[in-house]
Image 1 (cartoon, rainbow, N blue to C red):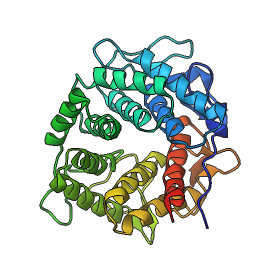
Image 2: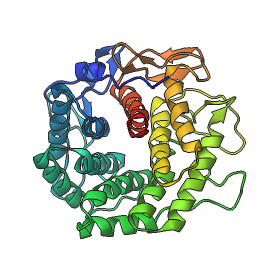
Image 3: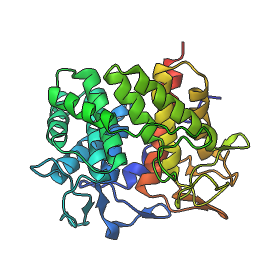
Image 4: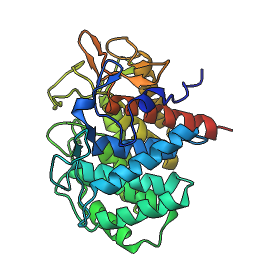
Length: 338
């Protein structure tokens, strides 16, 4: 059975002409909580990756690009939190919002068919990569975005120099076969670390880095499977002695695995990567530790987390975007199939 087609209805309902509201009470946007750059970077990513998008979805790309443009300061850093009335509530930084912005912008350059948007996004990436972040996941998100950009604009020397630096700083797998993860504990967005290794190794023609990324992703995928379904790292993280299932599980963890498996499948023919994407889709459809659906098929809204008693029925932006990106990866495989 083919995977469901991405449904943008709820995301569109969560969005006004300024941005996509971060939180929801069930399926109603909570305007009082405002907007988040982390989310808007993901909105840009899913909007520009959607082939044959309807005009309303194409408009999302313009809204999110304007939001990110306003979020970026002259030094390449990004604000993350915007009040509902449009003023920024924090100082610019090179935290995750910076890395995710580069990720979304680089993806837009690689996939958008709007020349003006591509040019603006490319210029913003070049401004952003003059910075470096002390945070591994911020650097990993940025590495994936710059690798995306270099695939279509290989002449961007400043972007390539950033990716070289990012690759040098990537933590390699450890020597303990039972726990090769380069951190003492799994935390959040874990799959972005091996995905960044695969993306950077491919762009820079470093096959050893690609292989290390594939090996680390393979371990993570196996570690996050329980009884033939995904049982992802909970919000509190997980260490070598922890055993699942554990809660709350976040949809963004599933989406990160789907993205990483799709990147792995592009460079390696091991069927485990396609199986990983199928498992991610099936997690949302109900093949998970709760045996419950984690989205609203009629609207595309994603539930905010899997708890011991079932889904958190609020449908915020992050979870809805996690559904969309996972289904997009599955849909791309269907489209590419002979």
